[in-house]
Image (tube, rainbow, N blue to C red; front, side):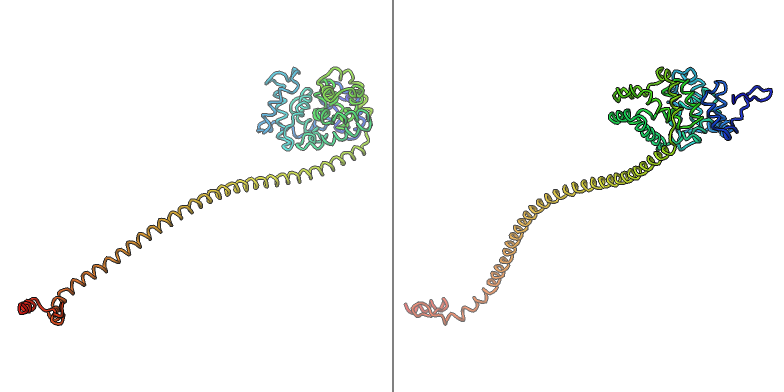
Length: 417
């Protein structure tokens, strides 16, 4: 057995897997497929992933002293991770504390990924085998070397690649089931996303999930793809008879004993499946090309939506301005009509005023002429009286008698008598 080497007198397993994996990785992988003894599993996982001498172990405690923006989300999800397991079910106990610490440390170590809910089940599985520091080191290796972090990135492009590959393999290997899925609009993302994000930890019992981790460490993400196809192959006759709701319930059932009953067959089928790496690469490029085009279209769509939103805002403002101006126009027309009436009234008032002023002017103008005439008459009256005696003799009276003074007339009348 490749774990038989021991270190001198210490009795601690002295594994040379660190160098062996570089020289004879396929041989070690075959040995792992046969099974890892429970007592050696923690060390094998560390050595095979390259985490045994990770310098990040020294940074772990530094991360714990820092503050993560994901602390609240992590604390909320801790109690939901393996809630039935004795190590994690007690609130605030060692298991939940360790789980919280490792996920917090990783969220600070990889700020692009931060925290993803599915990663908690993987961390929990590691903590069942090793301490916090070692679990953190293995987690970092799984994220980087096994491309798990690509699944957890906000864009989740790697998850989309795997779903596309699974869908294509399903069409190739199980055409009848594929046709049924298409008819039911049952996309891989509806049932297989959790398989990849948690490495089946939410679907299998702990012994099976641990075995999945063994094989994942040995073969990488392709094993998860093959195991997914093996499950669909095993249960295809039953799935074809189900509707969408029943299929979702069946494929997402948690810790079902039925899965465990078929565990050996599932692992054997998954191990025996051979995938064409060239085809998988082609499918990857195909998906990424379409995704890139869609992203470009989405960017253009977002730009157009943004522009449309701005135009709608401008239109709304213009409508408000138009309504305001229309209201102002109505007010102006009303004021104009009122002003026109006021002008007519004022014109009438002005005309009346002018008429009164004209009458008054004429009256005042005629009064001085009369006074002047009277004054002139009064001033000329004495002069006329004084002139009368001179003119009296020349005035002829009645019956040829000249008008004379009273005295002369009297004397004349006396003579005549």
